[in-house]
Length: 81
Image 1 (spheres, rainbow, N blue to C red):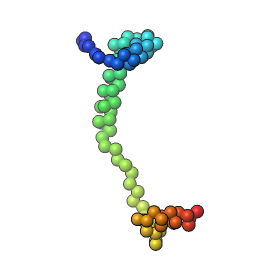
Image 2: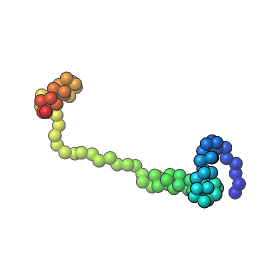
Image 3: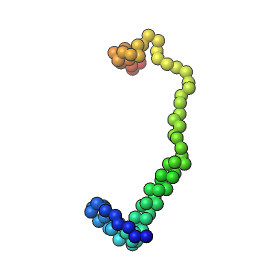
Image 4: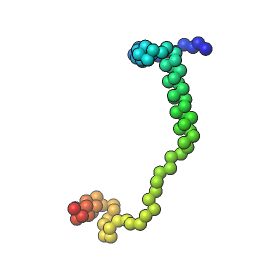
């Protein structure tokens, strides 16, 4: 099938150079690029939602340290060092 594309001049020049370097046609290079993008979209859809790990352990703040006070947090850090 034939179609007309409006490409950036530099992009087209780079694509032609790459096609020549790989001894393939510009059409084949564009087809491969489209296939890669379409395959990546399908692969991303198959993966679904990314689940982040959640730490369910114990612990927390040191008793007596105000978590809303930068000064108190910095002081507690200095005490440990």
